[in-house]
Length: 624
Image (cartoon, rainbow, N blue to C red; front, top):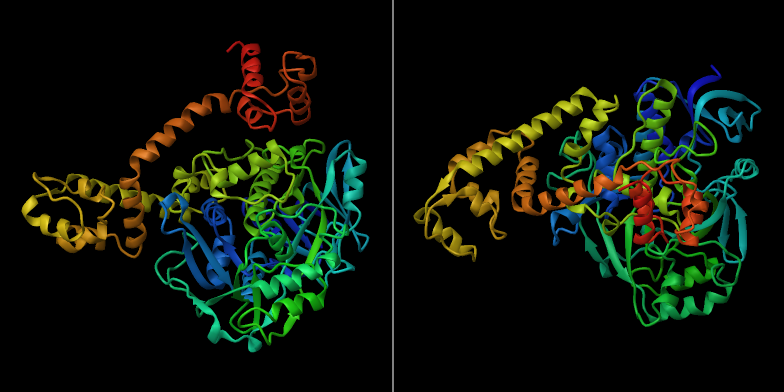
């Protein structure tokens, strides 16, 4: 083994895997250090990828040249496009994965990536000289040198598991925690804190009465996560199942609250507001008599089911008694109980937008150590950290994404600008420009960027070019094809939309919400022939074309707004002000601007507590 690398990635979770693959695929000699090679890419909580806004992040990772979308498609046992009843800006892909296949697919990719090596060990210390990373020291006593280190330790830093009054040291159930790194970085001036997350009990499927549950099947159309994956699902598809808690469930849970680590003072850290434990639900929503639960399969060859919506750290017997009151689970046997876990994180305002720390050169943080929650948020950060670590090693312009370019850009800007006071979870509502950050066009937005930095492959880039060419060609056909009232009015009447009095172009009909391109292709053979000529990706192309035509006005308006904000967004103020001496700023503004030291006016404007008048003062001082 060679103990000299360009980049060392600490942690083989979702952030670490993306970071390692990105750096290695760009040409850096990369070492991924993980406690257990058999747990690489482990889905610590639910066996699913994507969801509201999270699905968009995975599509963006894939578009840039990342791996999560490919791994998810290869391990998918159910796929659904969420929010179909809303506009396409809100559509979000989600997939249930076979947990074991997910790990195996990651191992297959990692162990076959050129320039990427894996070492099974635990990092005890990051080696630093003169404010710059030099490598790591492992539990086996090995010093490994590197130009850059990316810390992606997830929930393992000083991890403490809670099940009732019982406390277990660990980063996941039955897995050891990691100690030493937090203490070292605190001594160097880093601000740290504690956060909490949790997971539900796992149920033995042989003891579930599925006959009383509502079945939720997946979809089997052309949608998928990766823009490269073949449409056909590789694995057999499975259903999820819906059930509900009731007053009997809630009564047992309420009686158990005195023994809950969340309510007896045992847990002092903050948990995710948007993914609360079942005990938090019955307290926060005391008027609700039931809560929806989902039984999600863990895999094709497993009887294990994940009880989504029932995260808990209550004593084991309380969990069992409450679960037995739920329809379909009266005789349920558990594989393991739910638990809460507390872990260390670092205030993300200590990072640049590249995810390099401001305090130590060439040290990067990514994933839950930055105060986020979720596989997708972690993977997005890991990708950006891996790209920029490679750039730091080999030269080039730092790489980050703006808020109007991607959900990943929104995520990272929120973290480094606003910080976190609870585990951060992405939502579509966090993105100001979500109409132009749709899941369907992530490749058109981001693959050229990934290609230009050397991450996206020639094959991926050529597919994007051919997709754009096909969309443009179809749009041109629709814009120039003429229709006459006599040939279309009966069709319009059947679809409850007004008849034509004069001839028009086909595009005028596509603009109507009641009419789709596929509807019109059944009416006009030349349009059907045009669609068929596209080939295997015709469904994807038609959908993208229709979204562009129907929402073009909204898209152009949002792009115009984004361009106006760019004038402020990129107005550089780094190092131009001595904030404590600007007495015309509010006291809070002086303190926060001095602490975060924003790069631009745009970043400064999003710092909590910075008012429009504070921004105006800075603009005046800049001579604007």
